[in-house]
Every structure is written in C-alpha cells, then in structure tokens.
Image: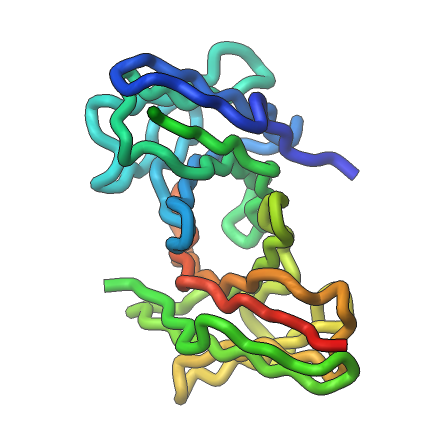
Amino acid sequence: EPEVTQTPSHQVTQMGQEVILRCVPISNHLYFYWYRQILGQKVEFLVSFYNNEISEKSEIFDDQFSVERPDGSNFTLKIRSTKLEDSAMYFCASKGRVNTDTQYFGPGTRLTVL
Amino acid sequence: AQSVTQPDIHITVSEGASLELRCNYSYGATPYLFWYVQSPGQGLQLLLKYFSGDTLVQGIKGFEAEFKRSQSSFNLRKPSVHWSDAAEYFCAVAGYGGATNKLIFGTGTLLAVQP
C-alpha cells in the first residue's frame, strides 16, 4: 500500500539554524499539507499546497517558514531561523484528486531546537 | 470559528469492555468528519470518515462512529476493546470545497487498556 514518507525521523538543531524537513507524498496525489504537534498539544494545520502554490496557511506559518515541491516527488518544509518554540513533531500529509479524499499522513519528523 | 472538542483527555477501560470516545464539532457548513489514531512514535492512521449518507460509519479495527447533526457530535465506539487499541485518538473536521480541506483536530483522547 502506498504511503507518505518523511525524513529525517528526528532532527536536532541549534536555535537560529535553518532546517529542511522532507516528505515524499503518495505518487498520484495533488494536495499536500504540513501540520505540527507540539508535545502534549493537538495537531495544528500549518500550510496546504496545490498546483505548485500555497492554497492556505495558518497564522503559525510566518515568514520564517516556506514550502517547496522541488521535483515531482518531494515536498519540503523549510524553517529559516529556528526558535525554541519550533520544537515539535511535524507531519506531512497528502490527498488525492477530489474533495472527499482522505489525507494520508507520514510518520512525522521530530524537531528539537536547542 | 471551526473547532473540535474532545472532552475526555484520558480514558481507561478494561480489555473486552465497550468504548465510546466523544467528539463535538463546530462548523458552519456541511462537515467532513474523521477519526485518526496515533500509536506512540507513529504517524496518524485514519480509522474512519464521514462525508454524507448513512450516519453510522464503519471503520478499521472494528471501530464505528455515528454522526448526529442535531448534537454536533461524531462519537467513536467499539464494542470490545483489545489491548492493542491503547493509543491516542483524534477527531478532526474538514470543510467542503476549495483546494484546502485542511483538517482541524481536537486535543485528543489518550486510551489506556487494562488487562
């Protein structure tokens, strides 16, 4: 069964450093998402991406964040200058062609900012 | 504003007992409703979803959920819990239409299963 994959599984970085989190969505999917889950809190929407552009972003997704689909398979989330409060589990998700499709989630990348 | 409430943060049940996890949503239009399960260190796995039609939906692992529009609820049930069901359960709502259909999650219910 096709699945969403994410790398790395755990990333440790120093405050102020740039990080790139990588995702490989399911191959024929068209809608891509990033969510995050701070430890002990709920999963929060960050950004959605469709047709090579951001379709919606949350208040969390400020100028420090960017997303890119550099080729036909990868979907990346970049944090330019990490803060302590960016420490969280970051989930990538993808969805197929129609509104009623399900979002399939990857296993997540745990980001720890020191 | 769209929101999802899961009033039970932590529930403990005995193996073989029945289970009901509560979920209430606030959404101005026709909602799409989901239950996801997260095992420790794992991603989010879809248990079941409701888009339209029959208000009682069946999912994987023997779970079911009932959509009650009048109560704005989408409670998850299982008649007999297994030890492997211990996990965190998230209810989520998504809107119809548009390219986004972002998911709005509740705070989750952590299920513990006693032998």
